Image 1: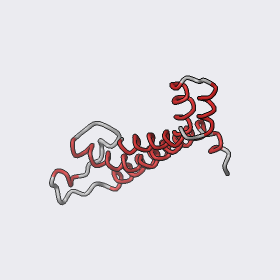
Image 2: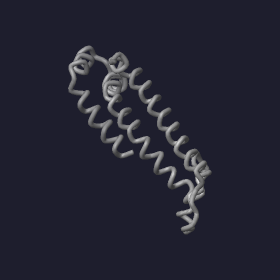
Image 3: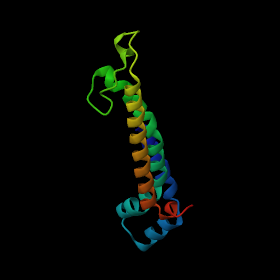
Image 4: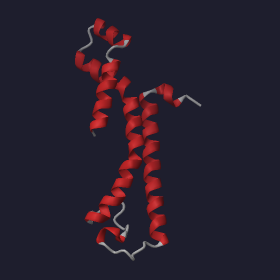
Length: 129
């Protein structure tokens, strides 16, 4: 969360030095509109990229936290006995495969959505081959 805030703040500060921001101010556009429509739109692509990269870390953390604290969620069926002190308990192959498939699907969908958002925000990003 803090990293996203810092990245957004740095990207907005960098965007505020651009020529199109000076032009908008010279035209008399309200500062609130400049921040929302011009500066934030120019600053969002790197932030979206950062969020999409951090999804894999978040998913792996969720895999460990949900079973340990018995929280309901995507990975509630992960019967990993290491948190209960069961040394001889080994999860079955089906459970491990399901966890990997579920995590890969979640990460893939999130990365795809982040790419769509980046293409919508920055049209130049969608035209690269």
